Length: 263
Ligand code: NI
Image (tube, rainbow, N blue to C red; front, side):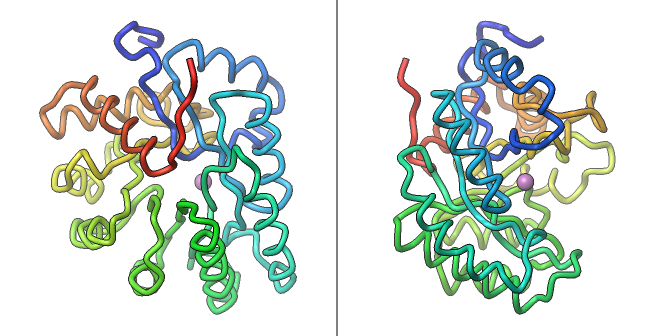
């Protein structure tokens, strides 16, 4: 299925973690391979200073890799405040397309006040540098929506897990909804309704690889080429062609990240 001519250069993966150790063995074989087989561009997300730097390194090496830099809520501690200045410096790199992965995750032990403080500080950095954000929101929908309404960032709510109503609120703020492999899972209900009820013009595709591989690869290591399966599921739900899904979401991703690949 991979490498069909109709999907050449059609996949824009808006959320990856190619710095993850799951790719240590074959990263420099895998990336050129997927770029020859339909993947147009990826945006690698930072979770701390080290992964943000690593992502910039990948972006320097590969035309089709862009970096997001940021502090993930899971990676925070009392000293994280000291890292904000470095995030701002890294964000000045020409291949940095966004501040991410930032947000709130109330499944973690990290104190909520600290999460909110670091999250909003990074929203301010994004605004100051005129960059979009890539946002992680787990079990924190109420606080998230309140903060987004107040700070009005541009960007993407990644791996969206909220209701149709929340998705519509996010879209009203001018943001995009990130759709990944979870959509293909047998037990997916909420996200299927979200896809059915929001316009394709407000969706972007993502993997969150190495995690969340779509069916039929669920549980295996994910990579950007598997986005084809998520796109197929969207095409079934919305009754449109997979080409239309890939083409529109790629365009959306180019717009929100303000990037394009030469050649
Ligand atoms: Ni992620």
